[in-house]
Length: 394
Image 1 (cartoon, rainbow, N blue to C red):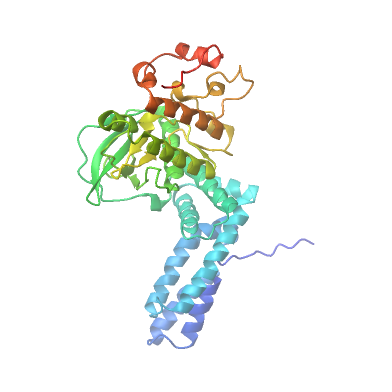
Image 2: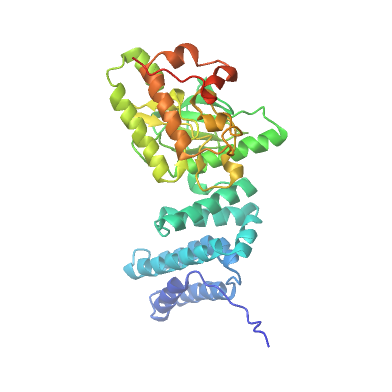
C-alpha cells in the first residue's frame, strides 16, 4: 500500500519555534497582542507548502510576516532570532539545491510566471548574495536557474534594479549593436545608460530582450578591478525600456586614450587587460567580443573590460555560445570558417586569447586603426586560409 501522506514543508521552522517559545514565556505585555500573534503563527503552520517549489515561492512572504512578529515582540535584534534565521536560511539553500538537482522541480520552476516567478528569482538571488551557496558548483547551478527563469518569464531579480538615476542627456553619446549609450547621473556621479533600442519589434525584440537579460545577469556577478562595474538596471528613465547602468568613463576607450596620451603606458594597459580576461576565464566566462572599443579607461587610468553582450558561460548550451555576432578582425580563424577547421562555431577561452593577441596588435600598431576598422570579410580570408599572417608591429 503506497504512502499518500502529504509532506508539509516549513521553511522557517527554527524561527517559528523561537517565536512560539517567546510567546509562551509571556514576552508580550498584552494578552490580546499575544493571542493575535499566536493566531498568525498558527495560520502559517496550517498554510505550509506541500512541494519544494511552492515552499520557496512563499518563503519571502513568510519571512516578512515572521520578522514583523519579531519586531512586535521587541525581538528584532535578539541574537537567538539571528541564529534561528541562519538555520532556516541554510535549510532554504538546501531546498534550492534539491530543486536544482531535480528535473521535475526544474520544469515546474520554468513554468512559473508573474509574482510566483518573481518570488522564486528573488529567493535564489538573495540566497546567493548572502553567501549560502558558496560552493562553485552550487553558485553556478543557482545562476543557471536565475538565467533560465529570467529568460522564460521576462523578469529579473528585484535586487538588480536601482532608482535615482537623473539628468539623462537628450541624445545618445554612442550607439551599439542593439542599444544606445546615454550619459546620466546616479548618486551624484556620472553614469552610462545602455538602453535597448525602442523601435525593435516582434521576434527581434524578444531576441534582443533575451540578450539584454543574459548580459545583465552575467555582468552583475563580475567584480574585479579590470572589469567595468555593473551598478544595476534602471526602469524609470525610459518608460518603455530598461537600461543597464555603469560608471561613466571620461577617458573613453583604450584606443582614444592612446591617441590622446601616447603609448607610454601600453605595457601596463595590456597587462591589465590580460588580468581582466584571466578573471573572466577563472569564472568560466568567455568574453566573446574583446577589442579596443570594448576596453575602457577608468578615472585612475586603469584598463577595464566592458560590453558583455556576446559573453557566454563556457559550459552553457550551444544555443548560448553560437551567436555569430562580433567583430571579424578579432575573431579566431576557427570562428570565421568553422567548417574548414572541422568544428562548430563556439566561442571558447582560446578564441578570447586569439582576440587578445589582436588587441595587442591593435594598441601597438596602426594596422587595425588604419585599415581594419571597416573592411570586408574577404580581407580576412587570406589569414583564415593560412596564405598570409598579420605582421608583427615594429
